[in-house]
Amino acid sequence: MAIRHATLDDVAALVGIEDASFPGNRLDRRRFRYLLATAHSALLVDAGDDSSLDRIHGYVLLLFRANSTIARLYSIATHPAHLGRGVGTRLVDAAERQARAHGYTCLRLEIRADNAASLALFRGRGYREFGRHPAYYHDGMDALRLQKPLAPRTPCCSLTG
Image (cartoon, rainbow, N blue to C red; front, side, top):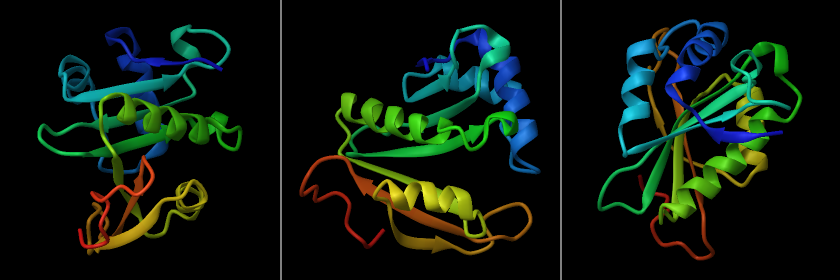
């Protein structure tokens, strides 16, 4: 399976995955285009067995902040037709490699408190809860804050926030 950096040619497929995956709080065409143009993010796609646009199985979006050792996994989505096929695991692995390559030593994210499948994925990959945002999502659902050190004995991943 090919994990690669997204391009502007992928925007329509990315919006399609967003629309199929999330009932609210979706990224739109304009936001994807902006994120692809900024050096403070990385947008990776699982292109399946080939790189044709209609074969994108999922994506992961990382945000980078200057003068920080903590990268943020801002969004991850697998097209519903490809759920349960390891797409999420491949994307999380790629996100961790990308963050390390940019010099980050910790990866953080927020996840819906009721998203059992995603929670199992991240917890199974060594992410630990360190906080909660009440009523974070459009429907009032809380977000759990998770993090993972990307290097042994990383001090930036304190449990305080």
